[in-house]
Image 1 (cartoon, rainbow, N blue to C red):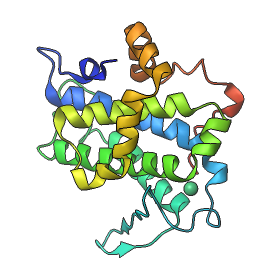
Image 2 (cartoon, rainbow, N blue to C red; image 1 turned 120 degrees about the vertical axis):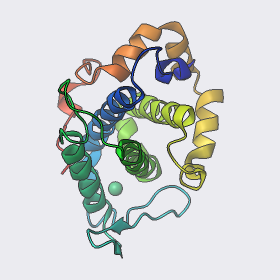
Image 3 (tube, protein in one colour; image 1 turned 60 degrees about the horizontal axis):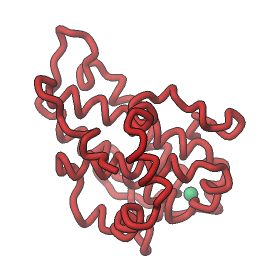
Length: 212
Ligand SMILES: [Zn+2]
């Protein structure tokens, strides 16, 4: 398994373009998995936005004040923020003439950190439902992609990623199925990670892209 190859910047490709495409793919995948279990993530089941090991995430409101919000609310804020940001032509330009802003990398760092929080919540609280829906391989792959991107470009602080350190180790050492799949078929991995429309292996019934 070598996801490092997947995230390694190809010669001649713009760094920001590369970050942008991976950031958008990660957003799609996290959105897909969370959307599928979101009916289980409610004010009453998840009154706090928790991750593994008693970690609680607080939301910074527009005035910069930290507020405690329920997980579904926090994740709704995250997904709305990211959707708005990646749709903003002045931040994620798609037209040739437009350029990335100088703050682009710090915006990507924020997005990747927030996506990490959602992934952390999924593992800590909803893994049972993720497994029930048969989406655990997809979540593991999304996590592996996120961490590979992070390791390549140092996007998130260690104090953030520490909560899933054990999982990171375990996935490399013990998840033979995932490892074999990745090792045996790199094209398939690229398909799964690079093309968000390629979700044919997921049952249509179980997939909900609505993150509300
Ligand atoms: Zn939840």
